[in-house]
Length: 547
Ligand code: GLC
Image 1 (cartoon, rainbow, N blue to C red):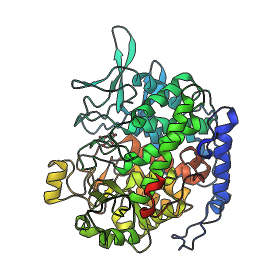
Image 2 (spheres, rainbow, N blue to C red; image 1 turned 30 degrees about the vertical axis):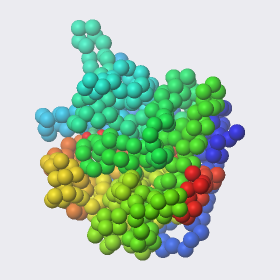
Image 3 (cartoon, protein in one colour; image 1 turned 120 degrees about the vertical axis):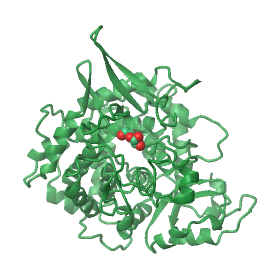
Image 4 (cartoon, rainbow, N blue to C red; image 1 turned 60 degrees about the vertical axis):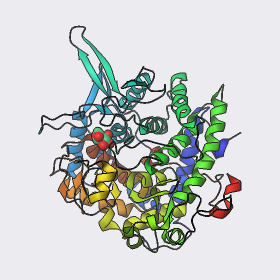
C-alpha cells in the first residue's frame, strides 16, 4: 500500500524521484486557477527559474570558504553574503574533529553568554539548510547522528524523568583537558527557563533528516536502523493514546521557538504545523518492515484527522470570522456548528479591522471555548511549506501578508506574532515577563530568522517578489546592526532590548533566503507537495461523521 500517495523509502529513487517529480510539476505549474491580483511585480516560478537557470543542487562540495552560490551566478552577489558565510563558519562547533553544529550566537560584544554558547536543535536548522544548499552535507550528517545519540540518554527535568525519544533543546561540547576528550552535554529543558522540554526539536530533527536525504540523495543515513528507531521514538511520544479528543498535540507553554510563557499552551499552531510536516517527512522515509508498517498506518490516520481539523477549525478568513461572530453557543450533539463552544464575545476587537476581505490565516490556538486569534509567522509559513494549508489557503496567507505588510513585516521581517499583548493581558498571560514586553522578543518582536520561512512560503506559492521585498529590508539593516536576534517596536525599527548580536540563525536565515531565491529548486528540500488523497475541506456541520 502506498500511504497517502507517498512512498516509503525503499530504494534510491523513491524519495528523490517522487519529490523531484512533484517539484517539476510545481515549477511548471501555471498560477493557481483562481483569479488573483499578481503581487508586486510578481513572476511565476517558471519565469523565475528560467531567468536564473535551474540546475541541480550542488553535491559533495568540500571547499569551505567560497560559497558555491557565488560562482554559479553571473550577477554580483550582495556583499552581505560573504560576511554572512564568514560569520556562519565562525559559529561552527566541532566534536572530536568533526563539525557537529553551530552556536546560537557568537556575540563578543557582551559577557552575558547565558545559553547562547550551545547548539540549539531548532537554531541549527537554517544553518543546516545553508550548508546543504552549498553542497556541504557533512556537518548536517554529524549533527543528525550526534543528536540521535543524545536522544537515547537518560534525562531528568528536576525530579521527573522524561520519556525516551525526546530530542534535546540544545547541547554543548565540553572538552575534558585531563583526558584530552570531547563529550556532549545536552539540555532537555532541565536548565532552560521555565523547565520546559522542547516539543519542536524532534520534529525539526525529522524534517532535517528528510532535507539531508533529499539534498544529497544519500538514503543510507535515513535507512539505518538507528535513524528509523530515532524517528519511531519521536513519533511514539506524539502518537501515544491518551485522553485526547482532538488529533492536534497538547502542549505546555514555552515548548518551542517561543520558549517562555506567552499563552500558547494548548494546541499552538507552531507545533501543529511542525507535527504535520514531521509526520509527512517520516512517512516518506519510514521503511515498511517490522513495526514500520504499524507506524505508517498510525501516521496515515493521524495525518488525515490532523489536516481535516486544522484546515477547518484553525482557519480564519473574513467569511469564517463572520460565521464565528454569529455563532450560537451551548450546542449539544454531533450536529453542533460551534464545536468548541467559542463565545463570540471572546473575539478581540482588533481582528475585525485586521481581517481583509481577501486573505486568511491559521489562528494561534483552538481548544475548548478557546480561540487565540493571534497570527503566528512560523506556523503559517510551515503550513504552506508542508502543504498543511490547501493551495487556496496558502494563497490566502500570502494575500494577508501583502495586505497587512505594515503590521506583519513593517521595517524588519518578520513579526513572530501579531498583535502583541499589553497591559493587564500582558500581566496575566506572560506572568509580567520583562523580556516579553509589548512589541518585544516573543511578544510581537520581529525576528530576521523568519525570513527563510517566509521566502520558502513565497517560492512555494509562486510569489517570490514578496520575499525579495523582505530581503531588501533585511539587507538595508541587518549587517549594519551586527545581525541581531530580534527587533522591537510596532514596525520592528529598533534592535531588540536584550537581543544578541551575531545571532547565528539570523545570519543563516538570510543565506537560506538568498540561496532559495537564486535557485528555487532548493525548495524541494523543505517543502512537500499537496497530498491529493487527503480529504478536501468539508463543511463543518457535516464533519463529525467523517472523523
Ligand atoms: C531564545 C529563543 C529560542 C532560541 C534560543 C537560542 O531562547 O526563544 O527560540 O532557540 O534563544 O537562540
